Length: 341
Image (cartoon, rainbow, N blue to C red; front, side):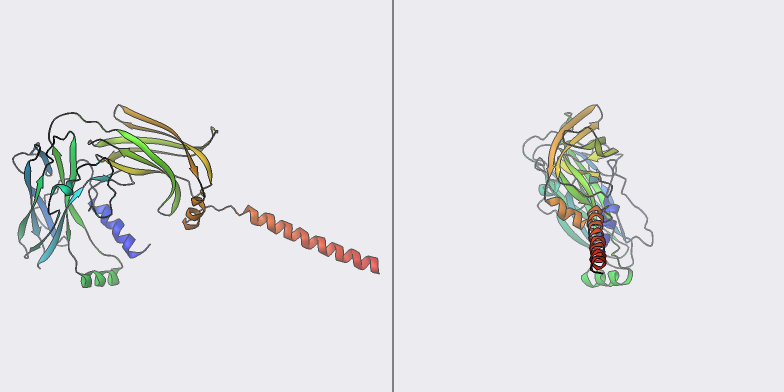
C-alpha cells in the first residue's frame, strides 16, 4: 500500500463521526495535540446540551457559525477550516470529511458548503493563543422540510517541505482533524428516509472481488440503525452463491453508497445474476429482486484483484493431453523399432 493511500485511510479514520456527534470541545491540550476546537453555541440552538450546531432556521435566514480554535503548541500554527456536506461512505457510515472527491447525490439540493460564499478559510494562530473562525451561511429562500447536514472540518496546514520531510522519516504523514457537526432545521415536520436501488455492478473493494449494490436515500432525513441482508443467485436458480448481512449502518440525508457483497476471493464470472436484498430502518422495510448482467469487465477486474482463487484446471487438462501425446509418440517409436528389427 503506498504512502498516499495509507495517509488517506488514517485521515478518514480520524474524522468520521457517528450520528451522536461526539462532543468536540477541548479545554486542555496534550503535548502531542497541536490544536483543538470549541463551537460557540448561538441562541437559536435547539438543544443547548449539544456541543455541535443544532440550529432552528428560517427560509432565507443568515447565520454566523463561530468556532474557537486553540493553538496548543509552542509555535505559530496555520489551521485550515472547511465547510462540508454529509455523505455516506461505502462502509455504511455518515462521512463529514472534506468535500473534495466526494460524490454528490442527485437528490441533494442544498449541500451545506454551497450555503456559504467562503466555505474554505485559513487562520494563523500565535503560540498558546486562540482565534475565532466564522462561517456565514444563508438558508434557501423556499421553506425546506427535513434537515441539512454537514460539518466544519479543521486540520493543520503543512507546507510542502514539512510534508516531504515527514514522509521520508516515518513513511506516513501524521494528519488529524477535528469536525464540528452542523444540523439545520426549519420546521418540525416528520421526514422519513426513503431508499432506492440505483444499480448493481461488479467491483473491487480493497482489491478484492465483490458485487456492489448502489443504495440511495432520497430524503432529507438521517437513516440510522439500518440493517441490510443481501443474496446473489444465478438467474433462474434458487442456490445462493454469495450473501452479506450487516447491522447498525447509517445514511446521510440525500446520499448514496455502494453496499458490497464479498465474493470470498472468488473470480467474477460473466453471466446473468439475481440480487435479492432487504433493508430495514425502524418500521420501514424495502425489498428488491433485481436481475443484472456481468460482461467483459469481469476479466479486467479479476486481473487487478489480489488473493483471488483462480481456476487452473485448464492447465491440468492441457498438461495431461501433452503428457499422453508424449507417451503415445514413445510407444509408436518403440513399435517401429521392434517391427524393423
